[in-house]
Every structure is written in structure tokens, then in C-alpha cells.
Amino acid sequence: MLEQLKELLEMQRELDTAILKQHGNIYNENIAEQTKIALFVELGEMMNELPTYFKHWKFTAKDDRKKALIEYVDALHFQMSLFNHYKLNIDNIPDYDKCIKYDIDLSLYLRCCCTFCDDCDGIVDLFCIGNYLGFSWNEIYNAYKAKNEINYLRLKNGY
Image (cartoon, rainbow, N blue to C red):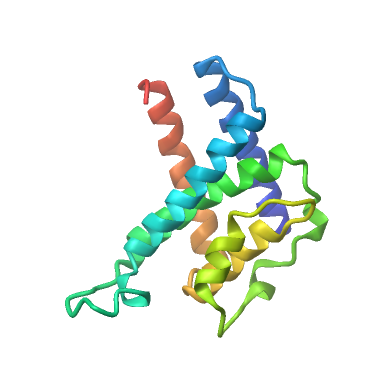
């Protein structure tokens, strides 16, 4: 898993470089702040695909796991972008499967996932969320790679 994560982090670094170049930007604290907001939004979009986790008032709530995984991977893109920006140490990240949290306070983990400090807690929190929601590392890895291709197509087409 660690080798695959290193691969994804490098893919994210290359994608960020391409996006910044096309838009004439550099990755600075302003971009990092915007990326944190984007991460927060993607987590919200993910949860909107999983309404049974929080919409207690809605009888017709139905989860869409496939769409939620796509939104999760979007959040992972932003999380890894921040990880790269802050030059965090990959050696501090436990294996995805060791981040299993059966009874987590989901709202707390969602909030903590968007907090960045000198360690890797944000990405570990995201991994805990993924495990809690039942996403396997293999699903995430493959979905990330597929979405990365889409992101390059979007970039090519002026998205």
C-alpha cells in the first residue's frame, strides 16, 4: 500500500504542477487555503451521496456508494495536494487497513480531515473515514487513477 500511495502522491504532484502551469499560478499559502476549502466541499459532496448517515428526517434517503467513492477520491486528491505542499513525511502514515475505526465520531473525523499541522493526521483521518464507509484500498487506488485521467482530460479541454 505504501508504494501505491507514493505513486499516487507523485501523480498528484504532477497534476498540481500541470494545473498551476496552465493557470499561471504557483502553489503558495493562498492556493493551499483554497485547496483546504475544496477538500471540505468534496467531503460534503461525499456525505450527500450517503444521506442515511445523517439525514434522519428523510424517509427516502438512499446511499449511492459508487458516487460517494468518486467524491471520496476527489477529497483524496486535495488531501494529497496539501500533503505534498506541506512536505509531510510519508513514513508517518500507517497502512490504510490499520486505520480501521469501527465506531468513529464521523463528524469529528470529517472536521479533523481538513485540519493541517506538522503531521499526517489529515490523510490518516481520511483513511479512517474511508474504512468506516467500507471503501477498500484497492477501490480507492483504482478510482484515484481513473479520476486522475479524467482530470488530465479536463485540463486539456480548458476545464
